[in-house]
Image (cartoon, rainbow, N blue to C red; front, side, top):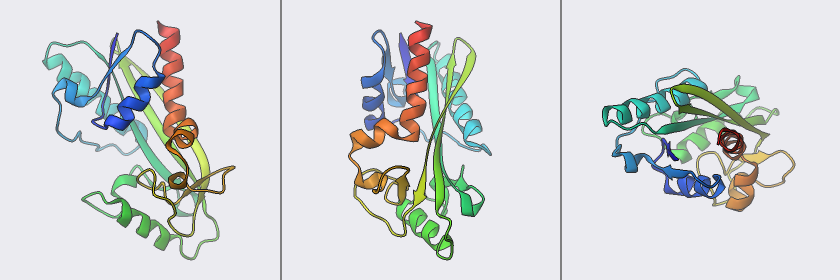
Length: 197
């Protein structure tokens, strides 16, 4: 069975392919001839995740294809900032997206705050046979006083997952992926697919 992930990120696609049960072939956006950036006008992670999956489904239907599609949206929620940046995580410091600018803005916003609690959240939307399913993953942690580590992307140099002394960017990709918010949401998706077979 073919499954399309609404992403062009080869590393994400490779990572998820390795986790899928046998009988599934994972495709990315380029495989469907979709090269444009998918709009994310939603007010929540769940809404954006759904809108991305729906956008791809409509494109595939226009091509006469019926393939199950899933999309994800992730955000960092910082307690002291009223759960900001949340749905605006990728564009926190403005457009165009810039990871370093986002990290600098976050540190500035937290400069006078003792509360560094935060959590990363991922929502996956799966649309299969015209039915919609949602899977959520989260990891709790805190924001470091300064950026550390060279692995990962986004807020990884600032996020210290609960139970670890290091930021995501200091951990190996294998350790991070095994316990990250996205990893946990993907595991729920895969569990569902195994049951659905």
